[in-house]
Image 1 (tube, rainbow, N blue to C red):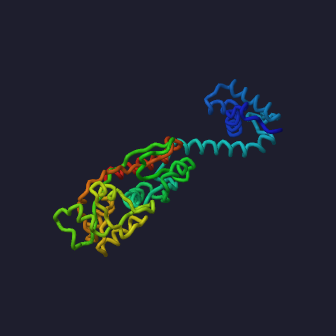
Image 2 (cartoon, helix red, strand yellow; image 1 turned 135 degrees about the vertical axis):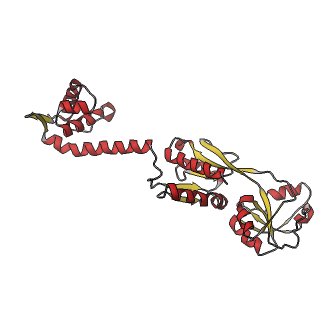
Image 3 (cartoon, helix red, strand yellow; image 1 turned 45 degrees about the vertical axis):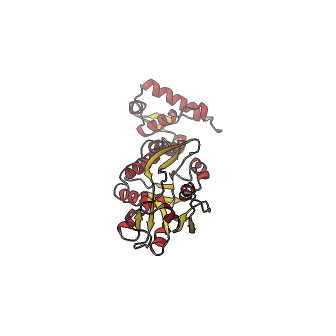
Amino acid sequence: MGLIDLSAFDLNLLVAFEALFEEKSVTAAATRLYLGQPAMSAALGRLRTLFQDDLFIRIGREMQPTAKAVAIAPGIKAALQQIRQTLAASQTFDATNSQSTFTIGSSDYTSYVVMPKLLQVCHQIAPNINFRLIGFAKDSVGELLENREIDLALGVFQNPPRQTIQMPLFPEHFVGICRRGHPMITQDAIAPDSFANLLHALFTIRQDEVGEIDKVLAQSNLQRRIVLTTPHLLVLPAIISSSDLVAAVPSRLVTSLADQGAVEIFELPVQTQPWMISMLWSRLTDQDQANSWLRQMLKSICEEI
């Protein structure tokens, strides 16, 4: 028999074959599939025509499979089982027993803020789930999501790519940090010109020397000296704690470090705009239950941050 055109083939016939093979009775197979006996008999007739074989022959009180039926039964049962497993997997996501691996596009900052709590919660309710974190360039995030190279991305997305969905997670703002006992930082508010005259460190992934603070200072004709630029945000607290440099960093980065006495936080003398940390995902995975579960986990965690 040549290849069958599946577009013209009723796959329900394979279900009927399976029931006949296991029940060895037209009546019992019809009952199992909630069909009338005439409908099951008609299905058997179509199967016989399709496979050009009797498939099942009545011997005594049972419908015994022919040699061809015995030969094709394992393949048909395996195909149906695969279809059932595929359909079941698409309909339910069991986080408790899942061994899924999620890939999240994230900077060191968002990883620092979100991942400890996410791992802690998942250890309790989804112990077999794994995570992979990768860095990404903003202009490539749409392609990464579309190609399923990442499941979602965390960050600031002022102009999200088409065919993506964005959900805000939490607001953020800048604070100043310095070492404990810095000679120029006291409990009194520091003036903008005094602040500009300090030695500064700047986090930048653009490899330039202009941050949000510089734009605000420029409005008052002030310019600061940037001694150090780095694309690694998490290195700044260690550098600040052992030097006279100061830096403006997201507040959630240093709250715990300040509590430990590693650095001191001070209020910046210039006004900067807060921003929103969001998660971004593709419309292609919007209805995916596993992706939806991950998004709900992150949303719940960030509500407590």
